[in-house]
Length: 116
Length: 109
Image (tube, rainbow over all chains, first blue to last red; front, side, top):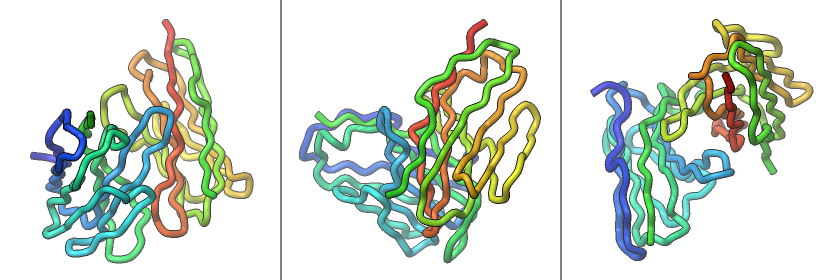
């Protein structure tokens, strides 16, 4: 693989169910991010990780959790999905560093999630 | 609050030049990014400005004025494949990207 992969590509989910969106990068980037993209709105940051073992909350973290057990993987979990979480979810990564970085973010292909 | 403004939609003709504007109000500034996003695809990096002035990269150029909170993306010799959304994003004092809603550019033959 090269770059960032996300799985699944799309998913229809019943409200109340638990769901984990997967993200893997092979660029050995330190920083990783989860965004959601909704029509008419800019990308909104859900959670981020500056380096393996650390995570932080973004603009819209409620209802979502993340973990960063290693450099390559950054899964996003919806503990109990609600219809307002219907969105396109993008994972991204950047070279980054432990504190602060202004480098370019590279995006995965996205996961289209529908919660009914 | 933090805010990024850009036009919702623009139309231009193949072969022409188009300028997409972006104004911003953010808590701190650590650079401005432009990304291109084709429908149903991921955003891809176009340019980064942190100092005032014009950065040229082939058919695409990006300008920044920090004192005015203003940037533009200039696309020359438009091609049909340039039909996409163009996203402006500012990195704030916490090194988080604040995104505009994007400008959908429609290219007509």
